[in-house]
Image 1 (tube, rainbow, N blue to C red):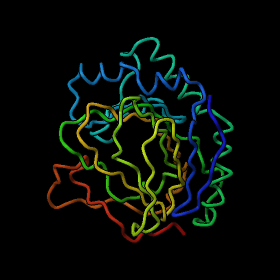
Image 2: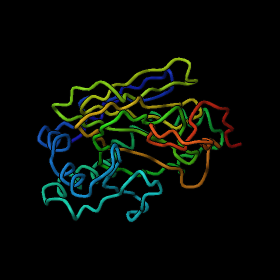
Image 3: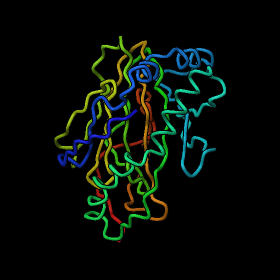
Amino acid sequence: MFKIEPKLYLEPTPHIIIDDFITNEYVLDFLANNDDLKNYASKVDMPDYWRFEVYRDSNNPHRSAGDCRIANVSNDIFSDKFRFIVDCVLDNLLNNENFTKMLREAFNPVFTDFYPNFEDTDFTCGSICYGAYNSLKEPKKTIGWHLDQGKTLISGFLYLKEDDDESDDSALHLSKDTIESKRIKYINNRLVIWPNIPTAWHMAETRKPTDHFRRFINFGARAKINRYHDYRTDRKQTPDNDALYPWKDFGYKEVRTAK
């Protein structure tokens, strides 16, 4: 079901990109274009650009969202077809030995270089979800320059762009210092995944008004024990109501790593 043929880039910060990641065309078409997500968002009157997801976790299958902008959705409300396909994809990817091996081989040497106390046993398969950001009527700033929290080892997305979505906005940017960045376009069936090291600064562009969802599979791996750096976003004095995270003061700053 998956093409495990990584292309590892070292600049501006280590990351892997795999295009055409899902090899089953029927499954890919369903994930990118099914009506279940839109029916759900319409039924619950979901706010503009709200993120909602169906979640799996190798350690905590009953996890609830800690972020009020992320709605974790019970699989039970969707069609049998939706549940079957989504469950198969998430479970197969979460438990795919070749996928995990790819991540370990590519990123463990990177962790060792940045974190002298890193141990392979601290690496877990992690969490995975399928979901989307809702359509929106006004432009929305997605997320500014940041790192993920220090217990996160790996972050990444599989993009699932709707067939008739011709937009070219809200692209991901990666940068080691935010002075120059690599722009990674939101392209259907593109996997981009990176180790959460102190050079892994990333942001997403503004999403313009659209009737289309921004669909994805989100993958994350967390350390079992250690917190490897101390990055946290600051809080704004006044909210930016044009932003998805109005109170978060994103931006580059010095980060201390664990000794």
